[in-house]
Image (spheres, protein in one colour):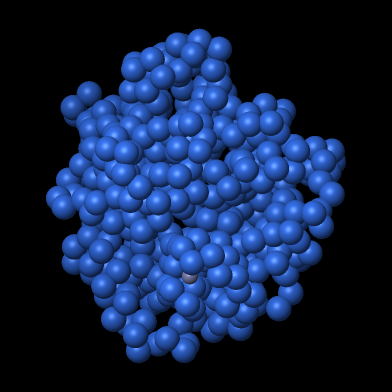
Length: 395
Ligand SMILES: *Cc1c(COP(=O)(O)O)cnc(C)c1O
Ligand SMILES: [Zn+2]
């Protein structure tokens, strides 16, 4: 299998065992999450290496990805704008707020960064079909990348997934199964179907494939480069399964260990208070979440009651000296509308958890006056415009 020079294989985060890249999903020994591993000594990367390249797609960081750009299933995802938001800086009493606008990806969310790498792995492994369950955006993204790669996609979504996400999954030609209930119910239907297709369906599901968090590393590489190599004082991320947060933290460690930066940016997990297992675990000092019993939030993308990677998320918050914060659905929708009116930025409804969380952190005195705060706008406002518009009557 064709891989990049420094990529040496996959390491299990639970038992520590190493595997080569022919291994495709979870740890064959213990079932743990596999993490792509590199021999950084084989690389000679400087700031100039990246500065001399066009800021065109996330594959400009190919040395720090498992697969080469010329083997990638790509639609030029990544290289998204980092938008200055002085009105939000005023509101939060900090020097600078910037919004990493992931709505500018091919299917309108940062899920594309994970699917481009996972779909590349699928093709290199010789897959004909891919499968996953999702709250909506990952299903749409996987359908698009499967179409680009010429693979068949089998997508399991809960009925509460957004109209746009379900529609576009069908438009891309995927085999869509809509399951009554929540993401967990879609997961059960996926697992049932997968049991009959173990040999012919290749999973691109979160933390089942090792490559989704790997692709999301690039959000942090780009942000740091866009800030002229300044490490921000806070990165606030709307957290469900934590794929993006875990990936960005890994990226920050890599840049530091390669000598490109000096520090790790504090990572903050923002959740909806109606489903906040990470915030609860963080506040109680636990190393692992407890399953959230009663999901009560409209934000499907971050309503993950049982985030399997919680130990990795909590480690990232701890090691980076960040934190976790929850906001009510009302506060999140208010924040989305405030951002749309005080700036022109269209935040996805779910993504506005990052804005609402940051407002709350600012109120608690977590930030200093000279801080630079990064908000991840993980998806475009237009993907859930119905949810945003529905809130207008109440502001
Ligand atoms: C999937 C999703 C999230 C949550 O991502 P995780 O990395 O799983 O925590 C946040 N926002 C949007 C728009 C999403 O689609
Ligand atoms: Zn293992």
